[in-house]
Length: 217
Image 1 (cartoon, one colour):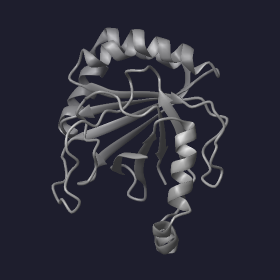
Image 2 (cartoon, one colour; image 1 turned 90 degrees about the vertical axis):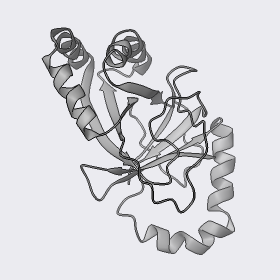
Image 3 (cartoon, one colour; image 1 turned 180 degrees about the vertical axis):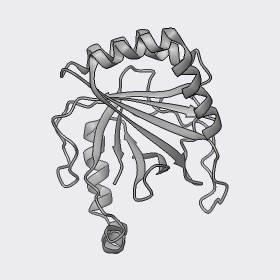
Image 4 (cartoon, one colour; image 1 turned 30 degrees about the vertical axis):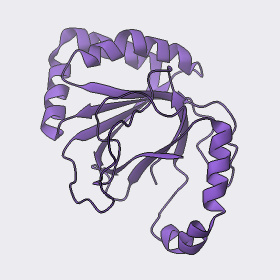
């Protein structure tokens, strides 16, 4: 498996968000079985679980398009690095009004993504619900939900605030918001700060994984 990134939630001090990626669902099952059935987890599981309020808030996702997954070119930060990044990663979770999340994904690709990328923001991944059954039931995932997750990178919180203000002040963007509201039941926004050791820090590079699990315990 690939640990894509780990983040602190700036709006919830009790939430830690992390993403791990797999080539496909079969690889996911083998990798999780190897880890959770292996000696490291056996040795540390009790102390690790003691730090978690909840570990079941997990979305099973895959790239909406072949080129819309996370990319992780470049060297991973040193294991004991204290160089925490200042950039901000914003995960926007759209809950379409119908189960046809792919219809919303088409609308997102044709209307929302070019508009956002035309501002000072950079969308670094667009993911949708993986419809395959959870093949590692030892780790529950949120089932019966159909979502699209857009991950956007900003240099810092100030840039994000400027983006929000610009977006709110532009008529064409307000009109787009009205169309989005017509198509979704709700939108959830997570403002995330990468940890010092996170590989994902907001730099757009080629895609890496076809299946990703996003956990925010």
